[in-house]
Image (cartoon, rainbow, N blue to C red; front, side):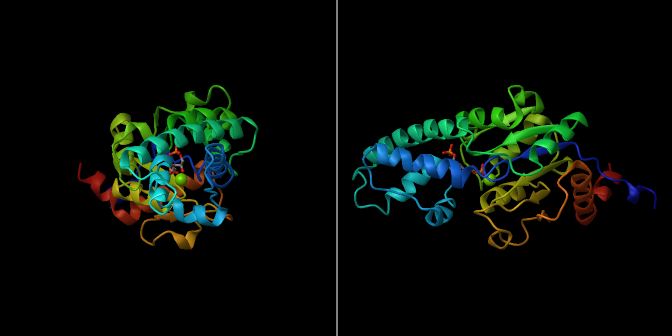
Amino acid sequence: GQALRLTLMLKALLWDVDGTLAETERDGHRVAFNLAFAEAGLNWGWTEQHYAELLHVTGGRERILAYMVTRPDAPASQQHKHALARQLHLRKNQHYAALVAEGRILARPGVVALIREAAAAGLVQAIVTTTSRSNVQALLPTLLGPHWAACFSAVLCGEDTERKKPDPEVYTLALQRLGLAPHEALAIEDSTPGAKAAHAAGLPLVLRPSVYFPAQAVPAGLAAVLCTAEDHFDLAQLREWHGRRAHAAGWAGVQRGV
Ligand code: XBP
Ligand code: MG
């Protein structure tokens, strides 16, 4: 009856950063890793193609450590491996910030307009990423200007969790901080680890494929809604997708029971 027509309000957008706000991986992080390797005298070039595989380990420091396992010229002891990974990661992030400052990383189409539209409409927004805080602080001003932080009620980064995506920890933490239930928010992601994290946190999800995570690369069932190049990427479209998910998941029924 009437109660079933209740539509659930979309209250919050939870934004992934790398691959979602901008193509940071191919043109930013990957290039910066290679600069850090060369600077340290290491012959460890990561090609665009190889980096697609490396991205399945989330976290830059963790990615370096995973790569070291395949390198005979990596330090032998765990202690030295960790020390070198820390040092390379720090330098990588400095190179990344410099690349961003050079204007090498641009926002993906529609992203900036949508963040502004959602802010104007009074939606809560958060940054929910596994990247380092310094990388968010380098990138966001170039996309949204010096007052970028005013658009976000929470900015959760790699340093804020024990476990990185695909673990749901960062999303669970975001919902806690915002005081929201999963079905009141929408996660916007590009990658398999990101989609898994959002899914495991019980969040409805819009998947917007990126260069490293084309639609067919992400396991089916995680992407609640697939956003293709033909789709509008505006608030009306997001509300429509959220409503569709709410309907499919029977969330209106959940609300009726309250
Ligand atoms: C991003 C990551 C990060 C970046 C590099 O994942 O996995 O590790 O590749 O940044 P997501 P750091 O888009 O799901 O947040 O070197 O700072 O980790
Ligand atoms: Mg991503």
